[in-house]
Image (cartoon, rainbow, N blue to C red; front, side, top):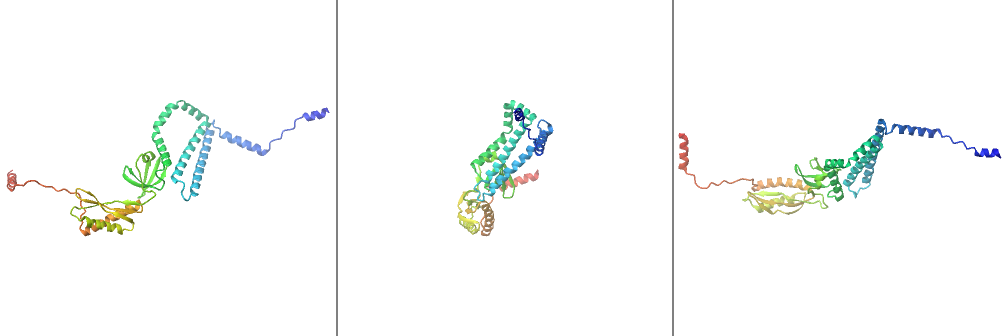
Length: 319
């Protein structure tokens, strides 16, 4: 009975770990040693891991949104909104990774803590320094929310080079890019484009009325000039409807007529206007209708004495 109790009290031998599990633990411990943020090379290695993870996550975000666009052939989802969300999500992702890395590295954590001690001063300095950048970011968010235009819309707005027309290509966190008809890129800050008046030429009804002004001389026949203009406009293939050609102004040296005609879209209207102006000039020359230019008539009041002019000439000869 005593032997049986002693045998029962003896603990069972512990199971020895398998060689595979011990190797995995050793490799994990070795990897943790190499990525120890308390040492310089460990912090650098950890930073490389964070960079690789950030690039992989950025690629995943881009791929997900691209798949979402590919499965939306009817364009129910605004492409400009998707692009802006991609930029914003990538920006927030890198900020979170940077904060997490600085929290894991003790030296950076201490530096962050010391900077947070003077957060009031730092926030004021950063606020003034990044005022324009933050304003553009907020303006970009408002453009995405209110949608005054979409990607592919044709906008007409004022730039330092004058009145420009371009197609919206991209809306990033800070800037909006437009492509002109001659393949130039107009880059405007979101704050600038949100605070100015824009003309969206890509509305539901794409038709555009062109209103070129044609000037004729005061001695020219108005009805004859109007008939020529209307005839050329109605004969043009890209003009869908001709409204009229009234007199709109009596200028200093000309009578101004304005052609009113509908075209399919804004780009077509511009091409038709240029084409018609050339044809009108040629037909006016054939019909003898003057296209005046600015000039002045000088009227001399009184008479010039021939005797006085002769005496002035004689005096000049004696001198």
